[in-house]
Image 1 (cartoon, rainbow, N blue to C red):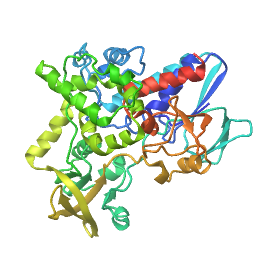
Image 2 (image 1 turned 90 degrees about the vertical axis):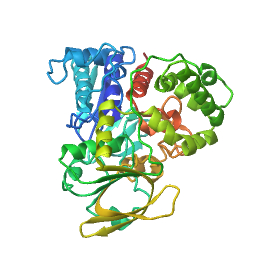
Image 3 (image 1 turned 90 degrees about the horizontal axis):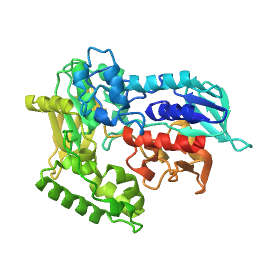
Image 4 (image 1 turned 60 degrees about the vertical axis):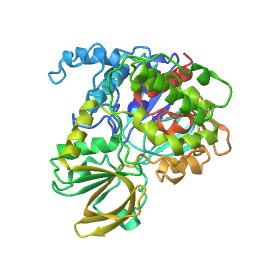
Length: 461
């Protein structure tokens, strides 16, 4: 089997397959970066980049929820004393450390694999995927070599953001425009006193501000998004009982208006009884996949258009330590968060000069020329993604974009659906690429469950 991508999802799928396979199995794990288990999210070397999920919910194994906490407690690491990780697991550790945890799980799985299970790692990009006459697949690598496999799992993660609205071709080509916020070298090249405009106000923007601080940047920062919303903050709270089982299990199609009204009513009741809104929202988590499946396509579109911005900032929260840094930057006047639109971006000798229009107004506000970084979110519309593998999948008819423009179309069993509407037998997808079918499939709790489920299916366990 070929696993394309070895960030969290691809690596953990390989770990589960190595442990579950009952018949002779050979895995090819392919990752251009050559660093298994870390991916973009967990390869940062900045210890101030913290997980956005509490340690108690970060185990790699759904059937062993305290595995990561035990791993932390067992570490002989003075930077993380055992007392820093309470029994509740309500703590936020660095993403780089978590990447080491996943990397270690992979190493252990390789060493402990049964004799009939092997895993080869290939540090290269897959640029082409085709069906063989025998029903398998041929994968061609960027180096020119090819391998044949019986099945493929696409674990390709997120692509860099699409060009932000208002950024023309000339501005996008400017050396002062950074299209990939995780290009650490490009971010490090920003002069310490240069003004910075960040397109977006989400979790990636928070990470970027931390990176700028780490690099010694002290110039003014403006973060711009349509609504100016920023992630809310995690807070320890007592758990709230499940309250939406009937809707999740109903065979009647759901309506997003009624659903959001019910959740708001529950928040009002729960907070009146002394519960925190966070635990009330978290009580939805076990039901989200089922709820999404009960929403007709038009209702999903309505959610994406009207509810998603508020859902994202309340559902995907940030660590208190990160929130504290952002609050200090805003209080000092260095960081300004604007709600509005980018009107124009003009190249000048010392940077890009931006003009923005505040939300609800018509006035045009000029910003000093400087650097612009795109943190508007990963590109999801696969019809517009130019990566060779994506083009190969779509042009060859093995896959099609999902109707919502959130990734690839897949079945409830994560089998990729071809251009003809028929599932492509043996071709699976996991992770953000399946967001259109599963919606909440970007955080570790959902990803680890998907990896375990797919591995059990493939291994016949």
